[in-house]
Length: 172
Image (spheres, rainbow, N blue to C red):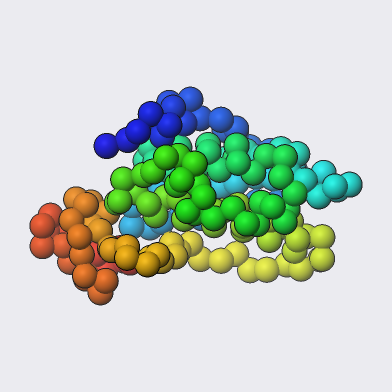
């Protein structure tokens, strides 16, 4: 199910932890599968680079591997470079994820982008209300929906998986 790169980042995650007094924090979660991810940033003010990045993730092996790989990809990058890291970039760096775990790569990129936005907001003196956690439901060209529980292909608007008999009232 998981390739060697994913297993390595799951078994030996890089950059786990909390940064005290972070410059930016991004927190996302997927209520359907239970994955929760928080990214902490320290920014070098002089050259606007990510000087330190840490994560805390509660979730499956894919979510942990995504968090680990994401932090490796973002460390040392300028904020503009880090903003360009996409969910697809993370999944490709991990040499692929199982179809029913691709949503985990969305969480990683979203958390990073939220942490950068939090940093930008703090610098600008903007205080935003905490956003409710939600997973973006996106598909690239030719991609299908899959049940997050049993990996059976689903109709885009399905609310119940006939294969595993699970309720899908949350977005799948």
